Length: 604
Image (tube, rainbow, N blue to C red; front, top):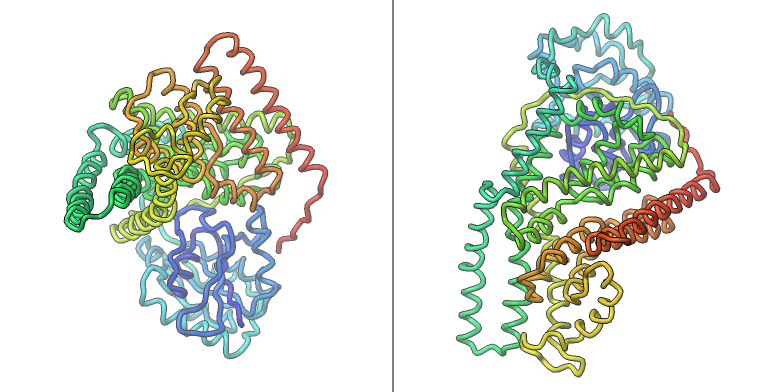
């Protein structure tokens, strides 16, 4: 088995090349830190050859955790492809020289030459080829035609080891490279690198897109209504008629129509809203705007003992908490990573936002959009407070942020459609694999009494789950959640946040009084992330840290709900307990971090 590694500076197209060679659909983006771990897959049409995509690296060395972990691949692999952007040829050649010291079987591939030519720049390939034992190849990795050229390179790499040598970078740039006159869309830097205008533009852009996604008259709301009607006419009604014709038993009818389809539909109608939200973040990533916002926020985040890298983790969490956790691998050290991980559960993920909107519709549909907007902004601010508290108690090492601005790019319709296709596919798989399974489990245990008799939707309070959850509800009574159905919905939400909506539908919760609704909203917004996220916490930060995360956020959620329920003496007591609990939790992190010295992986 031969392994070929793809490395290069950030934003040069490594993951696009990896997808082209392996047929995978790994996430790509126009910002530094999209790839946080090495990803491997088999080369299409070639047995025994593995292609590995590494996080972006700089020639000067490894500054972040994921770069340090990825460096070890360069020592043991059979060959290396150093991919570089034509406009940033110098950085690519400098990295090439560093890699040659570790592995002689190295190829240089130049990408995005078309952008350099459009800007008035050029590369003299005849002169350039004279500096290398194996000539560099110019490709456009976002075009399928480049696949054959790269395959020929790999074929040559596999048949004989290329004794590559270090080259003179300055001499090459002076003789072979003509830079572009001006960067396309460079005038946009006057907006996105100007603090005041950048934040004003970003704030209003967020507001407009989120209204389109979650507003009462937003386009996503109209599409959601159409999806609901289409599902009922094309799925629910035909199946119900078939059951009637064939005389299917009441239990099977209720199980399919109420337990499975009704719960799935209650979550499916939110797909257009989430797709619009995902589309906005995708466009911001691909256009190069997010990287500049991270640069502007670097100074602000430095006040919290972290850097602009944290911005990418927080933004990723609005899609999925798991993505945010993995993104913390871009942190410079273990202490910074733990601090960022500690703050992430406050960010409402794309599974939480529909539930918040759904719950607020119990009170007022217009208020629903504002609740979602304040949840997004409030979660971000709460995360900053946690980072500040963590930085005050744990004096972690000062780190610096190395960033290369990606060029501005117009996002193509093809890229948007491909990204939406992937998002919809993952949503439906999650819907079928988790939500539908949880709905079936709920239906069975709420339709059977303790002596296993079918209740047929009547007297659900005598079901197996009702008996168990009524006892648990006693614990949640101080938090204003004395309805066993609400407690059961929160438990279900630990498996998948979207399941709370289907649980409400299945359990017949149609009205909630105002005080209970506020308590439930606060509890749901703060309490621990789903099991998938907790499993990622365990893999990335350890079992002890995961237990602390769960207990910390469960306690904070309980206290917040109790404050909303009583607003009396408990208000002051809860604040004191919260402060003490946070201080103790952070102190335990400090002990666990400094008691064990982690092995340092040397960079190259």
